Length: 531
Figure 1 (tube, rainbow, N blue to C red):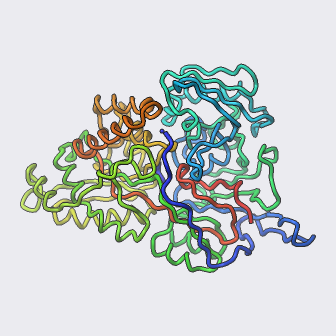
Figure 2 (figure 1 turned 90 degrees about the vertical axis):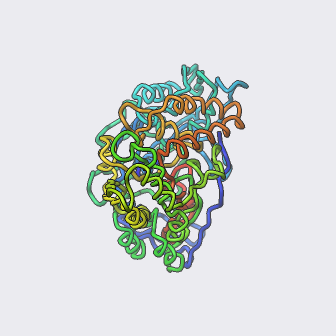
């Protein structure tokens, strides 16, 4: 998942900080016009006729099927579809969405959800227990990448229109899993359209127009029958304007042509903090950058070379250059999630890297080592990593051919094992560390996100045990997470974790209600916003 991306509830580090150099009072200058000022006095709410314009640097949608979608479309689908619950980073627990309440048996293997009454799908069909059951069963049957969130489910029953009962094969925190950003959607199975002309969601927005490859790729409009209702000051229309260059996105924000830029480089973010008409948001995230090494073929099949690459990265120098846009990693699991271990921070040791390379015939006095790396086109932070690493490796007689690529092309090449190093972000599918392990490091015959191509039966066995441990014995789960990370990073050297992202957003000053939720990376819940 490119932003990429790409579970018991743990704490969320940090709080949202909003700063603005101008008071919220400007007009929305998006593609849909400006708000109409009230003519009936200050007590009447302002009618918001503007379009909220989100400026992603990559294409938004790669898959329109809510059962299998597992990439950037999270930012749109989270506003079109809903799950039984939604994880709230402030309360650090799942909160009601399509389910109003739920209970579980003492052993964690039986769950009963009470559904919200009167909800309609965008197709007009009622959202009841039978429809929800049909939706989840279809998602499980489709076996898409994110469907693993339901892997504990043995049976689903719908004894009446508002009751959904799950019997599990093993204990799992199903209320948290049901808040996932992928595959947890409840949808009208007859409303699925692979071309994005319609949708079967229950969310506040529905598809107005989708044109793959166009600058304004996707436009959403308010669903009038939304169960959550509408107020005059809320945004009724949303557009996703793909803007690969950060400098261009920043200029558009300043001119009022876009309202939200999910990422700026450190220099532009610092400038945004003192720019009239702009507010900023900064918070720690659950998203880290991964360098996945090809453990199956090519020069990185040799463990010494992979270890040397880990040691060649100047982690502190990179963090300094990021100027607050990242924090030091410690293992695969970011702070704030069960599984984080403070003692797993990576180490930079150029001399040791040279020694390891020499052991296998590479280095300054040996044959030149040539490596191929792919990373996200338009991502200045990844480009910075590549620039610093290229220079460091050159001193070790290692030549790095680094190629920036659009996500879909990079991912396709990765699934064909066409590189030595695959750089991507990863974040959890729901607020738990399990996602890194089951997706990125569990054996797979056909690579999906296991782009280090690691295959290890013992690692797989430990990964499979994580959900039940998380539900029944958190101390044992924490120990297992620690052992897995040491095995993957310090024994198999399958990856490096350069840093954990700090989310730095910029948005129009007049926008009210924005809260950055790290459980749904880069998602703006537009229904929460107003002018």
